[in-house]
Every structure is written in C-alpha cells, then in structure tokens.
Length: 272
Image (tube, rainbow, N blue to C red):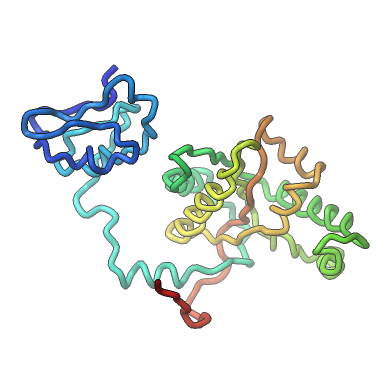
C-alpha cells in the first residue's frame, strides 16, 4: 500500500515534505521525482502528518484514513497577537459553577481539539474518562476526603494540611470539586514513562480551549493525588486494565463572567 498519496498534477517537487519529515524517510523530491517512502522505512513513520500539513500545494496525503481529510480554509485559525494575548490572560481557574450541565456534544468538541496535542513520538497515549453525572462527581469528592483521612498522623507531606479540608467538607462545603458538575480524567498506559507529560499537555489543550465554548475549568489536584494511590477511588473510576490516571480537571458552566486581568509576578528570563 502506498504510504503517501501524491497528486501528480499538483506536486511541484519543492521538497518541503522531505525536509520537514521528523523521521527523514521521505525522498527524493525534485522536478524529476515525486516524494516517496520506501517500504523498508514505513515502520519508522510517526504518522505525525508533517508531510501533508506543510505541503504548499496540498498535493500530498498521508495514507492514514484519507477519507477523513478535512480541507484547511485559507487563514483558518489565524489569531492576532493581541487577541491570543487577551484570550490566554483572561483564563481563570473557575470555582463557582451553575447547576446546568454541559452537553456531552460540546464536551466532545473540546476533547476533539485536545486530541491534537503534542505527544512524545506522536504516540498519542492519552485517553479520557468524563464523569458527567454530578452525583458521581460528589462521590469522587467524598472518596478523596476518605483518602485525606488516611493521611492523618502520618509522614505524608499533606498530613498537617488535610484537617482543614476535612473540616470544610464536614461543614457541607465541597472544598474538593467546588460543586463542579463534571470531572475529566486523562488516563495513560502504566508502562509509558513519558505519557504523564503527554497527559498534562493534552489537559492544557482542554483547559485553554474550554473558555471558547463557554466552559469553565479548574485543575483538580486533590482528586488527582487521591486517584494515583487510593484503591477505593481507583475502583470507582474503573479504568481499563493497564491504564492509570495522570491528572484530573473539574469543569462546568461558570457562574460568573470575567471582566478584568489581574497582575502577575514580573517576567524573569535568562538568556544564554
């Protein structure tokens, strides 16, 4: 099977696909030769799509589900420097949510964006667990409190900190998930040493894209910590065998709008 599909009428032989291929498996390409991948090099392909994405004439197609190819409209995704700066600076950790659920279809739209996040060798190891039921979110928060109780009077770094959190919970205040209607878990293979980083990158994509869909997010650190070690919570999540949680994020419809941008520490940069 041909690894890359070439529109011979459109290919100009510019050779850009050869230059941008991270694995260096495409060649040659000039006025006399079309780009090609030798059969013995196919196993080295990362399926990253650089060859296709950087082709100026869009004459090259990576032979990976080619029927799903979506044309990129001219200037699509172009954002001004000012707009991207304000968009990212406006990003807030949301801790007050309405009771209205976020439709599953909208969540899938944001996750579809997040699956384009960078990953080591384009391994794409991240999969998702969406806890959509608010009652289940509440149960997970309770299990997180149970985990915190197990830390009392131990050498765990959080041992002296958890009594305050437990007290808040006992006073009917959800200090764990802040009343968020939904939780998102990124889960990864247990034996992949770089996958935890890939998961954080993917979750960051979700975190950044969510406000464009009217969704508020907050990194659920307490839940993530409990899910990494507390067996009752792990059983509740019921991930497939061989997979583990990497981190968690609470989300929902924000109760309040954002009207300003607060200050941050001065920028500190070293140059060499």
